[in-house]
Image 1 (cartoon, rainbow, N blue to C red):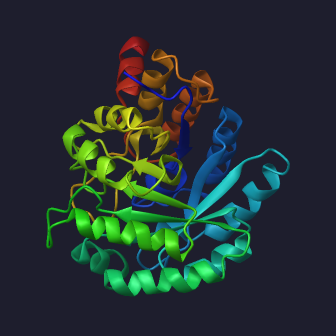
Image 2 (cartoon, rainbow, N blue to C red):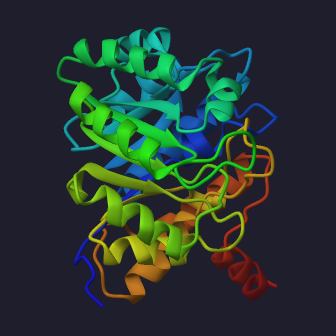
Length: 302
């Protein structure tokens, strides 16, 4: 089995993990959690999203969080990522001082309408205009529902390939393939990557898998065998799209790191520090921790 010697884990709990939690997380707590994640060794962290507070009220303090964390990472080689759904979000992200902008568009027309209120084509036209104005900022595109959508239209490989190629032509620096509903399995991951890698280099791709049905780590292992070495995960297993019914369960970062460490693959992340951050999240955020490692540690604690 051929595997990369090192992978990059991109931490998304402060955005994807927090976004659909009903009880507002105090801004000071968000900032403290992000700072602790930085100290754990992550070099790329998605810390917030610039979306309408009407639809995602948890992110209403996005600018304050960015400003505080920006000061903390000065000279430390850490990139802050913010998600945006449209031009307005892009403009706010630019002034907030984030290093990378993550633009989301869904392969599924149904999900794109639910998520951002536009057709996929309208979102792609918006992305094209944004890409011309990105300047020195790194611009990623997240292709939501890459691995399927249980509602509305079927996800066709040809359509996925078209969107991925167009994204790079417009100016995307990286393509995130997102398993929004947690429908992926190793065979499907293999089929999609086999097709994409014929035209796109592996270093341009990043995977965001959900563990909704328990197959998240198996899907990541499959992707690694195809040369993919960048993966998103959320500490504590928090998260899920607010507009994807039933699609809870990002891959817990601690579960992923435990597996990767056991395989002798480097990440640059301190496992013990990460467990301490998960403990901090459990104290400051009113939501269950769902990782396997957390359940095991709870048993040992009692």
